[in-house]
Amino acid sequence: MARGDQLGRQWKIIQTLISSKRGKSAAELASELECHPRTVYRDLEALQIAGFPIYTERVEGKSLWSVLDTVKHQIPVPFSLPELIALYFGTDILKVFKDTVFHDSLKSLSQKIKATLPPDSLDYIGNLEHTLQVGFKPYKEYGKFKEIINRVNDAAVKRKTVEIVYYTMSRKKETRRKVDPYRIWFFNGSFYLIGHCHKRGEVRIFALDRIKMLHQTKETFEVPEGFSLDEFMGKSLGVFKGSPVRVKIWFSPEVTGYIKEKIWHEAQEIYEQNDGSIIFEAEVEGMQEVKFWVMSWGSHALVLEPEPLREEITKELEDTIERYRSTGEGYRQAK
Image (cartoon, rainbow, N blue to C red):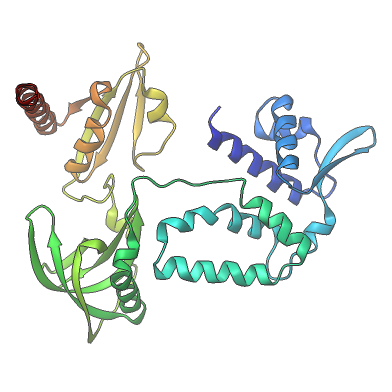
């Protein structure tokens, strides 16, 4: 059983018990969670060992599980117990933002909330902090770019145009341009600036760690009414954008479970085949990202459409084989 499934189920148990006035039996919890009562009993025992204030009592011949009322009422307004649980379940998420304005502000808020809690609740919260750990790999050390991140954030809040020197990875060169910062976007371990580029005359995406210089100008701007980051990213599989293309990808039976358990694209359609394989279809922008994704599955993925993407991946694989052969032979000779 995946650790994440267990934690997710235990989180639902806590939420259910908090919202229940009379408590819940293990059978009722099992029915709501669609699992076996024995699984619920193991989860309840694990939660008690972890320090969660849950207990059981006999009511009308049934064993009902509840959260201690004293704990429910110890949380000062305006914070509820579920809100505090959500905050402290996610404490580890802040680590990826270490040394940035986002981490510092959230950490300060967390400390202020702790200062308002009575001793018993502090002990309880201390136990919560050890029940869930969130991992981010790979990730970037954003402490190195703290100043850039802080200044971009300040400009976005004040609606001030910034002048930047930006390093473009694909062209391996730096360019100077003015940008109206609309949004700061955190995606897949990286921070991005989404804004109107005066040089290109359109909304563009800039990786914050590739901004080599930033100056906040006196020029102001207004974010277009109705601008939506979700709509702007549209059909992109990630960060790359381009013309929409219908892709059709075959996945082997060995990996279908991994593909089906996630939403990779909002418009995805999955068709199961008789041999246990699946065909993934979606209209996607940014073929580079699709190529990287498909190749990450190795021989378990095969592009059926479009043909240009098939050809590009074929060429990439041929080059990879040739590189392995040539460098491998050179390495053996060197030894």
